[in-house]
Image (cartoon, rainbow, N blue to C red; front, side, top):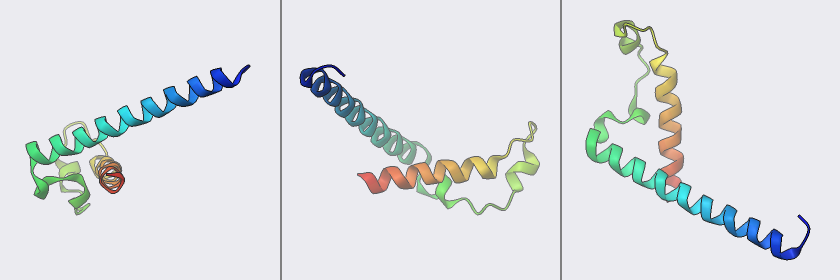
Length: 79
């Protein structure tokens, strides 16, 4: 960064991207809760593995559900 103006422009752009990301995350969680319903959200997964046994692709669904649940919880806490 060569000048203060350039640094300020970079900071402003980063702030705008951060705000856009927050809005997208908030919209994602709202849409997920609206379309799926709270009883089926990833953060409520019992991690029993039943779904993995039924998956024809043998995907690690429990691990994915943990990650998705953490993302949703963090998004909720942020807003």
